[in-house]
Every structure is written in C-alpha cells, then in structure tokens.
Amino acid sequence: MNDAYKILKNLSTLPGVPGNEKKVSQYIVSEITDSVDEVTYDQLGSVIGIKKQDGPRVMIAGHMDEVGLLVTQITKEGFVNFQTLGGWFSQVMLAQVWEISTKKGVVFAVTGVKPPHLIPADKKNNALPIDTMYLDLGVSSKEEALALGVEPGNMVTPHTEFRVLGNPKYLLGKAWDNRIGSAVVIEVLKRLKDHPNQLFGTFTVQEEVGLRGAKTSSYVVQPEIAIAIDSGLGTDVPGGDPIEQSLGKGPQILLYDSGLIPNQALRSLAIETAKEENIPYQEGFINVGRTDAGHMHLAHQGAAGLSICIPTRYLHSHTSIIHFDDYENTIKLVVAIIKKLDRKTVDQILNF
Image (cartoon, rainbow, N blue to C red):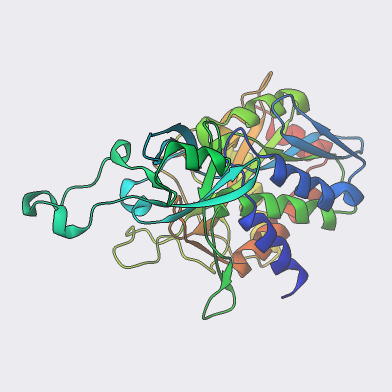
C-alpha cells in the first residue's frame, strides 16, 4: 500500500464524531507540522495550519468529524440507547456493527432489529424509526455494560474496514464525509511551495451538526477567499440522479448548495484553471445539504466563497466509496487555484 493510500486509510478508520474529533486532529497535526509555519486552533478544536506570506488571506477547509452516535442511556437489560450525530437514513443503520469508544477501549455492538418472522405483513414495507433502535452489546445487564466501560456520552462510530475494491482506484471506507476533504487539505499544504498569499489550511469540527467549527475558525482566520473541500454526491449508480455526477470524472465545482451561492468570479477562476491545467471537473450541486463554506463566507465582512467536492457514493453510511483520481485531481486543482490568488486577482474577485 503506497503512502497516499496509507494516509487515506488512517483518516477513514479513525473515530471522530462531532464534538469528539481529537484523535483525528492529533493525526492531522502530525502530518502537517513539517509543511506549515504555524499550527493554531480555534476554541472548539478546529486545526489551522498556516503558511505565512504577505498577500490575501486564503482559507481552505475540510471538516474532521463524521456522522455517528452518542450513548445516552443503558437499560437495565444492558441495551444501549443513543442519539444520532449528523444525518442518518434509518434503513442504512439496521443490523450494522458499531464501535463504542470507552475509557477501557473499543466495545463492539450491533443495531438491534426484529427478524422478519416477528414483523406483521402490513408493517414489513415500513421504514423503522430511528428512535426505536438500540445497540446490543451481547450482555444481559446494565452492570455488565458498565463493567465494559460503556457509559452515557461515549462516542459511537461505524465499524468498517478500509478496502481497495475490484478496480484499485475505488476505495471503500467509512467517514469519507469528510476525511477525504481533510486529506486534500493535508496534501495541498505539503505540495504548495510558492504562493502569493497567506494560506490557512483548516480542519474544522462539528460540521455535521451545523458547520460550527467553520464559523469559529473563519472568525479566527478572517478570510478574503474561502474554499470548502468536502465530499459530494456520487450518483452514477442504478436509480441515481438523472444529472449524473460520476466517480473518476473529477472534482465537483459546485453551482450551489443550501448554504452557499458561490462567488461567480471565483467559480469562473476555478473552471478556467481546471481547463488550463487539463484537470477534469464536474459542475455539481447539492439540493439538500451544505458545506463549511456556508459559514466561512459570512465571517466578519464576508469572503468570496466556493465549494469543491469529491463525488462519493453512499454518503452517511457504513460503506462509502470514492475514486482515487478524484482525490488527486482535487489536490491539483486547489494548488493551481491558490497559486493564482495574488493581491490583484483577489481584488478583482472582490470588486463589486
């Protein structure tokens, strides 16, 4: 496994739900320290790697958190009740294996669900409400669960092995939303040597529960240019969206999402740059959902905002799939864009 795949594997498998991203942030800091002039934090825990120069303040960000669960209660029989963190579709949660992070280590659990033999015929086609689900630890009492270290407040994440699939550029894992964006920002910081601006490579917390780290970190950075790197919708599957967004066909330069209408001059610059550098790209959009740019572009007096996304199949599930070429081409595109963002170009972008 090459170094790029190792980093992607490490980022995918680390646990880090909203409000509990520390293991992810520690790993990221270990990867970027030699590539930046300074590492700082906002007071929610977002990581900001700074490459100091004169010139415009450019912020690129990928969020560190993943969708998961939070332990809320243990029943007297030893079953675990939970609160979802981030958006889950109930059907993808059924009969899945989870990891509960405790002070004593990882405890495995499975989502409890009735077998079809016990479901009335007229109910079998109904979606099971999330609030009826529970986690089964394989114990018979609350005391046994507590002895394992399970307690309210524990982080719960999907149990999934990183896998290289049939075509070795297709990579399966959990948490691609948005460890793949974090991976892009790490690699941009490593590859970018000469640039005419102050670059703030940011790794935000709590995106999945309201872009919270994006808000606080952008108030620290005070960007003039704000680019979010996130996972996007991969719809090249049976029954997918008629406007295809395909894996392997390049990053998505978003037309819009529910939190951002991009700065049109910045978006045009991104498209022009992709064409000049022969980087494939797609013009995607997100009807339901938003990226960190939704808050980044609103800090202080505002910033020119843009979202660039890596198409991903099966978002917010245990088993998402990305394409390595999209990861690599996103890095190339972001590096090329940043190199163009000198004072004159940024002033033109912000000239209304």
